[in-house]
Image (cartoon, rainbow, N blue to C red; front, side, top):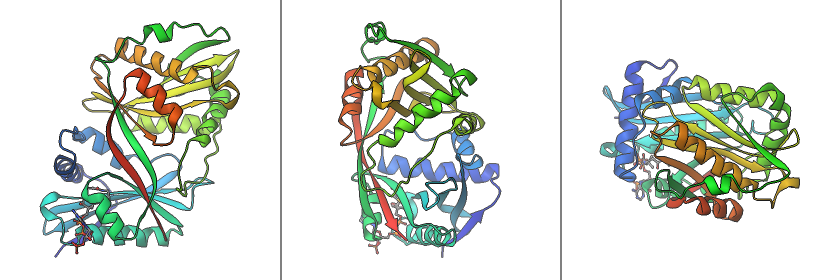
Length: 323
Ligand SMILES: CC(C)(COP(=O)(O)OP(=O)(O)OC[C@H]1O[C@@H](n2cnc3c(N)ncnc32)[C@H](O)[C@@H]1OP(=O)(O)O)[C@@H](O)C(=O)NCCC(=O)NCCS
């Protein structure tokens, strides 16, 4: 009989067991996808996301960890109605109710914390979708996961050097320099226009503290955050963020990209992303891939990514359950 145990402290052996479940689960459902490293899992379990807290559980049969679950509970204004979780059961222990047991634990905790909805992502054509649909979840957003092979992609230099008379590029590592903190916070709010389908995602208000805190969370996890921005006079008109995860760091993850409404239609999205690719190639040659996801109806972002050489990897879906 499996039982669920909440982890209050995370030991090295918890990290190793968690990583083993994730690696086996991914190898089973998404063959060829790189498994997370121990450093990456350690960073994830020991660092709480911005303006949120989390709860962690393992399912065990005897001493063996059969499943893992993490529920992130947002605390900030605009999103405190929401919980976001991930859940994995070791392939050797599936179809015995372990997933259901962990899901019930997650739902109970979310109710206890007065949440209205819980959301989760699953890849298309994997058991995750069948499980969530069997348990009453609704698909609220369809996404395309894209991958760019950094070394096979075309040379971005021509795009980087294209004329943008009213704009200039700047970039920074980690926390935003103080002279740009205010304008960056304003630009981050443009992410609110990102299509989120029927997801009960709430709104995020960005201010200078929040942009700094977000960068510090990434840093604390051990990851590297890169930002490239297009400036119009001294104001940020568009930006893109990329994270190189701690560990083997060969696959970078795209974070936010946005162009401020008054500056859209000037090719700035493509420009900042090409400049990011150029920077990455020059200074992080070990990074071979960039992963990103786009809502399937986000045609402008998809067009920019296609132009840069991103290719479809697989489809994913966001599922939601109203508590
Ligand atoms: C999704 C996952 C957590 C399910 O774990 P599990 O322990 O096998 O789930 P359960 O045994 O509680 O299954 C409950 C029900 O879900 C449905 N289900 C689960 N896996 C299924 C599959 N492969 N095909 C069809 N239906 C499935 C069935 O209705 C099942 O009931 P049944 O076994 O009586 O028919 C597991 O497959 C997994 O770890 N997948 C990878 C992670 C993932 O996709 N996470 C995102 C979604 S949570």
